[in-house]
Image (cartoon, rainbow, N blue to C red):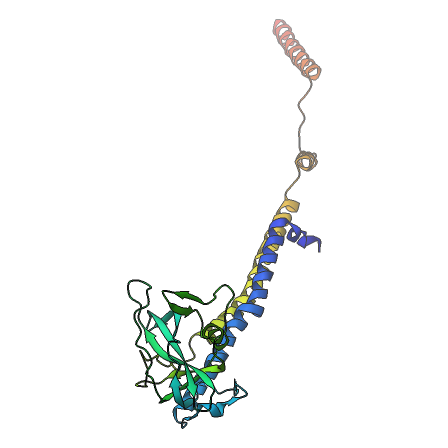
Length: 303
């Protein structure tokens, strides 16, 4: 454990916390979010595909005490009754074919007395975001063909309002529209098929493909796995580098050891320099010997 004490440094602690937080988000938020969208998209596509060959049914048959049957969305229905006059509601911030649009909602009174909200289609804004004039719904009894759609729900802060005498909302929520128009609506609405009485621009059906949600979900799972592995790689690299530096430091000679080893290794063969006294004595002996040799040579010659 002492070899990993460097992991307690602030930089490593912060990095570990960031990696752990990122991996946690990948596994608990980001990947489930994308995989959940993939599941819901596949379910929606299957419902639309099943409805293509199914015969339309009376819209009243899909409701029990005002609540739509489970898995009834996208079912083809027909409705007989009449539009309620002067009750149009505009839905803001819509996009049809990648262009801004308003969707138009109008309550429709069924023959049995219940009232269902009808999405008549869309109109394009004029002069920026200003809603254009809207053709009124026809009066009298009408028979409509459409598809059942579930309410979208609401978000806090996006409340209905009225502008230039037109009621406007941000979501198609039957409860919110019922309170805005003062009508008692069933909890789902009808989206009109093409060429229907009171219909405006036809809202196209969604494309029947799953989209990229599955691949996105798998990518987030991969990122959640790769992040800790990347941290482990850098921890190992740092540990190996510290281990290499420690080994190099332990094998390097110390300053005091250099002189001692050099002296010990050269003891048998190293010659020491003579002192000053020894040098003087040696010089005197050499001079005396030379003098004696000269005298001997001189006297020898005389004899």
